Length: 180
Picture 1 (spheres, one colour):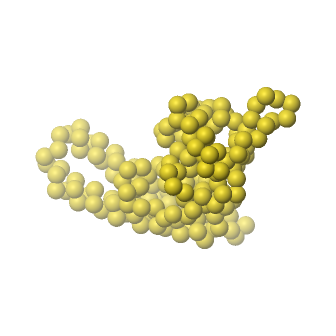
Picture 2: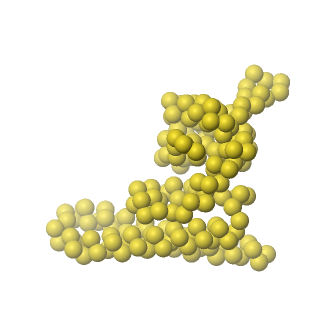
């Protein structure tokens, strides 16, 4: 849907699991690693209004309370599913690989097993290609980089290698769940 932001998709992913109040959504961002994706009151509440206006969520009054919860609509589920099914891109690998893992976390129960595995394989492929680019850069620039810069760069390389290994582990885990 037009103008749907990453924050919007993350909120949809949260409330597809269960209806939540705006406060609870905000606290989830504050208390977890989701805070890396934003989540201040100045972004959460406008995002909820936008999602409601676009009919991706609806507000439901909680009986016996003055509070309301937000739940995902059918249109919201469809929109979330499209986002989750989008294959990882090289831009995402370079700019925000943690978002790709978060997308994977939201896939149950909406995405079938074969598509989850395909997503992991695509993610691994893009990670491996980018790692090759980074290694080429390091070979070329290693002698001109400051020592701490090179060491920090090597941290990034290790992070990408760990993500590649995680793709294999996640795929095996999914496949073992299928045979149980």
